[in-house]
Image: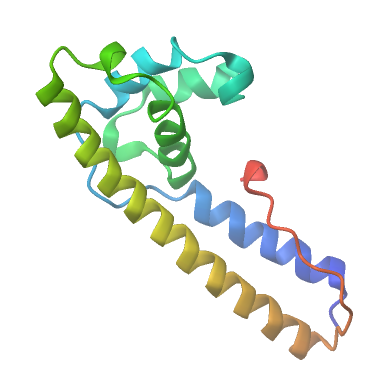
Length: 143
């Protein structure tokens, strides 16, 4: 018989694996370059990304970024005025159009995962005989 703690531990492992997986969507080749510029413009209290993680992201190739890292990059980029990242209005609109598509794709990927995770939790509780109303809290920062 599984306990609620067993189920939560198992699901946390699934969450960590999901957010640590490489992002398989299409990303602009200058995404990390834009992130490097943007991160210098955003207050550390706003982005709350640890310095070691910033450096890790900044050193990666586009194809090495994880789902979690792409989400963090998006969050930083949308907080910076376009004038800090682009030389022309046309460049800003072109990049922001790509960024919107990435955000939609990323958000859909996460939403689908969360639905799947909720079903998996229900199945594990049913199989394990756990029947309590303590909600499972998805902690994205632990990924």
